[in-house]
Length: 392
Image 1 (cartoon, rainbow, N blue to C red):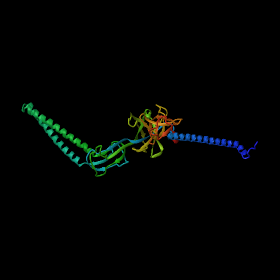
Image 2: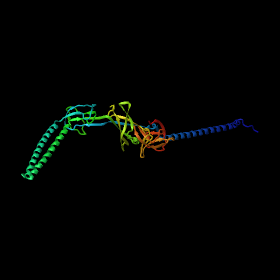
Image 3: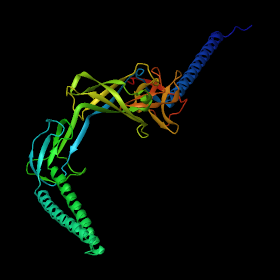
């Protein structure tokens, strides 16, 4: 038999090795293919997740301020118990003034005198006319009596007697008219003396010696202003939520910028018993005993009402930023974020407006309130909350 070719024998030994190389290459290729596919799938999932996340809006949330206390602080204005602008009631020139701003006066005290030459001449003429009318009346009376006696003796006719009686009645009437004119001018002349209507302090003087004085009206400037500052009134507008708790005799404390570290006591004496439909508040009036003459009328004050559980309870309230409000057709609302990071729209009621902050009811201190919410935000929308601190 012929011997096998020596060159062919080595090639037959390489066949198993080549098979394993091919199998290994196929496995590597398969692994690369699987890894690449998984990487693409993972990248696709990540891209999808990032796209979905990008569609969820990011919002800033705040926690409302702590639950409102039983102290209600409101602005108030101090006013004098009585304040009277004093006008001139006659024309002339100011002869002299006797009090200046800050002077204390008593009721009926002379404040100033007016020189009224026109009124004086008119009064003199009226008195002269009264004298003439009196003389005419007296003559008519004597004549009437004389004709009555002659008529009794049938010396004159009844017609002539009646005419004399009519002349007496007419003379009496004209004398009364002249007397009334004298009284009018005397009253007008008495207005030359400007007097204080009550005891108080002169808070303004708007005239000087020689100034032309024209009989004043409510539209003109008063010569003086006298104010009774022994007691002061405080006018406060209270939100409707607290209106039922405002009762006569209710005590309150207030502060003024003049005395930073001092509190003053006042008590409520009247309320309007009506809520203003535009502001939603009720006007109340308090009184302060200003025996020390420390406070001034017209001053600004901050008054604090402290409640102790008596009377109707005020609704629980918190403070939130004013930028949290949403004005919808259903009313005033806010958007809060629930535990699953979804939006919940809640109606609220505004109790007090502090400008940048509001005291409201309808949310709790633990709620997450969205500040500056988008106008199109809706109930149930998913959001990504970002903590922004506390509302107050």
